[in-house]
Amino acid sequence: MEYVTIPSSKFEDVIHHLRHNFPDEPLNASVGLCVHGKPCELLEHHDLMTMQDGLSVMALDKATGEIAGVALNGIARKGDVEKALEDMKTIDNIKYQRIFGLLNNVNKTADLYTKYNVDKIFELRILSVDSRFRGKGLAKELFRRSEMVAKEHGFKLIKVDATSLFTQRVAECLDFIVEKSVKYGDYKDENGQKMYDTKSPHDYYKVMIKLISDKTTDG
Ligand code: ACO
Image 1: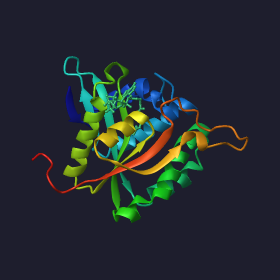
Image 2: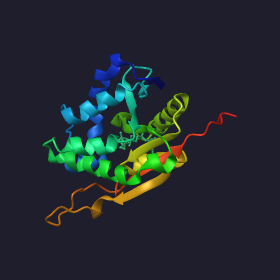
Image 3: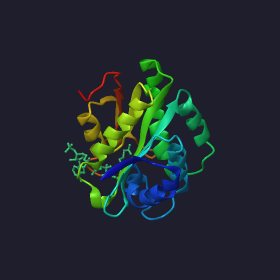
Image 4: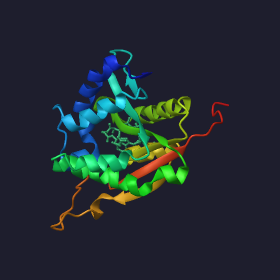
């Protein structure tokens, strides 16, 4: 496997990869915003904006040159979450509102900028591995590489909105800590119905962070 920063010439290929693999993400699978193989305008806009920050990483299958997995990383700044919550009011899509409403509201209460005295955060926003390559440690390696990119660019804090238990396992293994943990089953709509019907074992969404040390870790 070869790991490289995603160049703009590969943005369309990444979108193609995500259309076929990211819909399995537990929150999306629960509300059905994006469907396998189909364009998903609202999420793809978010993906393209993130890739434009130039911090995203992909794993390429050396034999075929195909994209095996991606970590889309972006810069989050103080005030972004509040603005996103305002902007969401103009987006008439209940599925989008359910996913991003949860993420933005939980992040708002976490207020990591104040707690860690930073004005920007390296966000690992989208983690996706081609279903043919799952369970082989690619997500873990994409995480590690993303952490290296964050360090190279001078970030003090890296954060992931870990909506999947598998992402939480990778993050724990790399010494991330849990800042916020919410149980999907606790959210009910006005009729008392569950808002998120995520499949087991994906029962919690966790905001996980790691402070990036200046010290070298390669001995
Ligand atoms: N069953 C049980 N455990 C699993 C499974 C599975 N099907 N798949 C992965 N795991 C566990 C692994 O055992 C490992 O845990 P461990 O270190 O305790 O053994 C951990 O999850 C990570 O394993 P990797 O092999 O590194 O993960 P993989 O390359 O398979 O990718 C990913 C995981 C990215 C979640 C993949 O399943 C995927 O693309 N899913 C669809 C999209 C998604 O859910 N993305 C994450 C959402 S959160 C976010 O995007 C920031």
